[in-house]
Length: 507
Image (cartoon, rainbow, N blue to C red; front, side, top):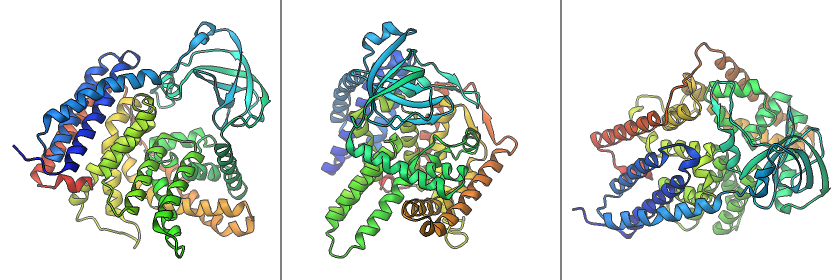
């Protein structure tokens, strides 16, 4: 029997077991809403992760781990039960014309069908679409919406896969929709004033992009910098999906890391600024950035990890990537357990980060013969390892959820990712300066224009490659679980055969 070595290992193991038990409780209580047999699948996953935590920390403190695991299961079920939206009397009004008064709880988005926004009521939210896509409706407006109340239904995407539209809305507590609604604004400024100010600032930056760049370039830059996807051309969005580069317009760890790095260096350059205060200001700025860009789940996860990293640095400690990831996921799931079951963006972000933590270091060892850098500044070995690690981690889940397998995702990411940080930096500078003077912004806007033209061309060209992506319609949940089981077994085999230190992989 291996001796328990440190209190840190005991705490880590107990926390991991409780986390997996809580997740199992959240998923188990939702089994009737998700699919038949999902509780057994969740039990298998939780058991595998439980054994993985025991292996990682080299402990036989089984009773404590098992006790914390079992104790957390009912708490997860209770938390999920309390997170469910309550349809109330609206259920009986489905299919009829209704008149509802509520507050606009998000930043409205212009679509071809009209102006889309979320109407927050007392116990539930409604996805409404105003007939006039140019209507003056803003976040925080109290409005009266009239139209036919309907329940959302899943639909087929352009790639031929069924999109879980019901689950996509359910994660935001939306159970109904009112298409082609007549909307009357009753009053203004009923929302959070800080969030309203951040949304106005977001709009000002996007307007600056549009003044300086073409429509396609401005929409792509808005996605890269701010995660704004509403203006992106549907054809180009399909090209992003086909090439496996759709993640570049979704706020993720890359965006938040760039913001955190810039802030840290800028604050460190201020003379006589206490590092603790500098990290605190950096943390506040990260929170404001994530809030301004719409509180997307992948950005929230990255923001929490970045703030934890700043806090650890300010106290002279090191933040362990896996521990930080699980802590970020635990915070998000405790706040709203619907992230775990219904938010595909959260699930993909979590899986991709796991791939970066566990798979990328192993691949980096196998790619020792690959040049570390090419063209003096492109870290080709690191990019190849990181891209492939993340792709391997998310591919089974993407096949199950979307049925799309990109055959050119790896080369596409290799030729796209090196210029993303530079395009974001130049574009952000052009956007900020453009709000003051277009003349000051022109040099940065021109540099961003060249890179954005390259991105538009390379992604569109690769998407037209014959057999760029395959559509797989028969990939079941059990096949997804089987692929992950095979991958975990292969991972164990590799690290045991190569005698790789597991804890070093987590650092």
